Amino acid sequence: MYLNLLKKWHKINEKIQMIEQNTDYLLYQNMILKSFKGIVKCLNAYQVNCNVGLANKNITILSINILIIYMTSQ
Image (cartoon, rainbow, N blue to C red):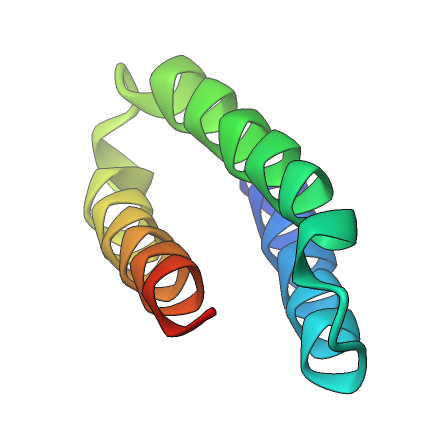
């Protein structure tokens, strides 16, 4: 289950790299937002599992920070 979350996180990193290489930010904005929604769904599903709770919170904080940085820097 936790592996799925890491795979989604990796996909987000790939999309962020696309943005860095492409000036058309709006083209990729929807893709990124969909990925973040996917991560939120995963986190909601994992909330009942105490073992991965802390790691999920850390990934969520990183995700939100990256999203804010990219939305405000464009």
